[in-house]
Length: 107
Length: 114
Figure 1 (cartoon, rainbow over the protein chains, first blue to last red):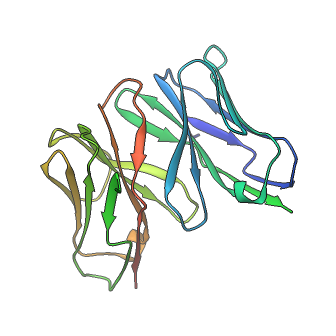
Figure 2: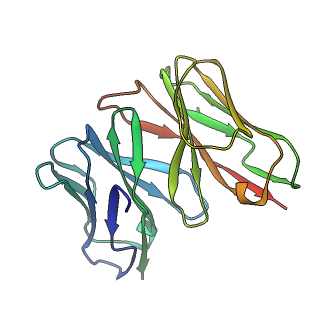
């Protein structure tokens, strides 16, 4: 069992829909990262969280340290949001990754 | 200005060959990493260096040898390449090895072993 579990694995949405991707982890962490990877592309860091909530444009990330759970929300989704979203947790000097959520937004 | 640059972007080679992937960061970060992304897009740490010193060495075959000539560079040399080595390899850096520091990733090197 991976220390970082993401759900769903695959998600297809219509343009404009509100999207939520979930991440649960089983270890004590110093920070949680949300990453984005477009097809054939590099990895971009979206958020780093150690508590509470962060917002950047249409993206919102929340974390509940007690419940060891984080969510990534996308409001007013757009086809350009289609990508793999990866949750990663940092504990000690390691970054441990979830398996990723493949998001496809249809127009 | 590219913050973390990897070369080459694509590498196609035959089984048994030896190849190197280079990584450089211009962010002044102390820590650099190599990650392997398999065909299912799952990322896993391979190595990490902090100020030229190896601090993470996961269960990776001895055929993989990282080298850090200075803290801005971390290269990955692979001997006797095997089919199973085909993957995308990402270099990354962070300011420090611990604590709440972000990561910056390179654009990846797609290695195909035929």
